[in-house]
Image 1 (cartoon, rainbow, N blue to C red):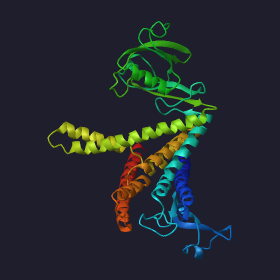
Image 2 (cartoon, helix red, strand yellow; image 1 turned 180 degrees about the horizontal axis):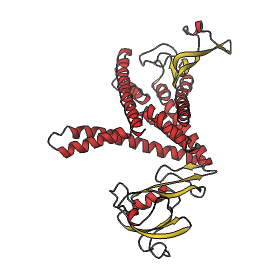
Image 3 (tube, helix red, strand yellow; image 1 turned 45 degrees about the vertical axis):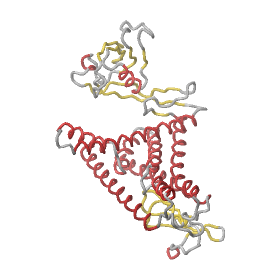
Image 4 (spheres, helix red, strand yellow; image 1 turned 30 degrees about the vertical axis):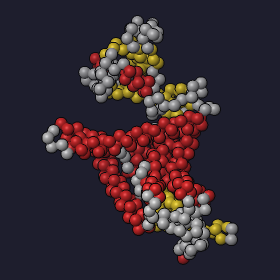
Length: 416
């Protein structure tokens, strides 16, 4: 039942984010004198439709659904819950009729095309502002906090999970269920020294532990932990930074961070941080994919081909499509609380914004770049040429979505 509920909630949230994106186009188009013929919630086939008649909105009969020229805006509710759309008059850049997108100025086109991504960023800022106020989970190392206005609330202490055989945690005789309380760097074995003799860090979150381990990877540290009612200290020689697990054990824990007057600032800065991380992730994905394919074409070096295969696999593992988001992420996050659900919502809203900024002709940023290139070349972007370029890019996107969907299904089946 939780899986079904997660899928329903995921569909509703994705639809809300896409409709919000399209509403940004709608507002910008109307403000810049471009006629909007239809604003649709969900995708056709159409279920219901309304049009303003004599100053009042009236539900249209099915026989009235076809929009005669000049009859004004139609707002429609459609059957497929996978987004929404904003259909403007004359969306081709070559269109010159009054009130069309094509006839508007380049600056107006810029505002209309980027209004959708602006709306997604604004929605993310609102979500993260609410989260900062009610309790923000930490998912990023160095996630923004406002000094003097942040309260840390530990909801679940940092706890040792599965301990790997022969690992530093295993050699220190740590067990699953041990609660980590404090970490100290070299020189603090007696439990009394302070900086600068050795760093002492209270462990409230998994991020505290991970960042400490990374800082002192390969060195000897001292951990204070609780097992039952007993508190003990143990010496641990950590793995090097290149190891998969520096401590050699899984960890879990949960803490939230609440702000008051600074919540809007935290919301804005968190959105900016995640935007930067998303751009970095996209860049890393492209690099892994391109460099991996190139290395696999090296027929003279077996190790290069193997590293190329690993890079391509890493690129595939880092991508999740609609099936993975709705069928896996939302059900798992929904069960972990409203805070994580809101965080995922804000994260996807930022991802939609970043994706639509990319220079892909089928997306907003790509369409803007295409128009700009032809203007700089002082050549006409004909309707036929634009449709051909955008159509091919759209087909390529569909192919990518299809491949990612197959990978999502394979991952779900292998994990199930």
